[in-house]
Image (tube, rainbow, N blue to C red; front, top):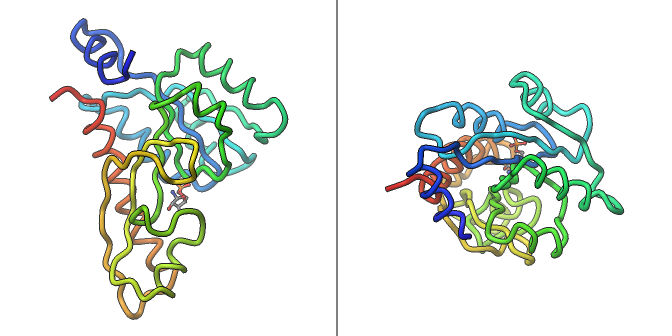
Length: 200
Ligand code: GRF
């Protein structure tokens, strides 16, 4: 059943919010932001699980601090099968990639088709992949920004939900631009989740 309909039914009969897993690989500022948002009444999601591709990262600290189930996987060999089982066991209906640096297999994406979101630090379809700020600056772009999109089997190419433009200034370097874009990512991810999964 399409996630939106499922959510509507859940909300109409007053049942729980959409159980969500967040996948991370680093600082976890988007995760921290999503955790804080999920605690608010207007959030259509709860965060029930954090999956990390790296140990000893700040993102895991936020999960532990908020007593959210968390597990580290290298995303090698049959890790994905274990992750799918774990997500099904936790009745996860939505996956938010947040600073996640691994490529999910087509098989995994198909298992959660239409239920995986990602935040990308560029105005897609421009600058798919890595080093987006560096590339936008060296391309003399006037704007960069961020995009929340559904994940499909092509890198950074799924249906776009929302985007936010961020002006590039002459004095900008990749770090100064990244800092401004990251701030907009936090706001955009919340807006995108509300847009897609909250009742009108
Ligand atoms: C940031 O560069 C962000 O643009 C991208 O992943 C990186 C880390 O984000 N989405 P986070 O602080 O781990 O959420």
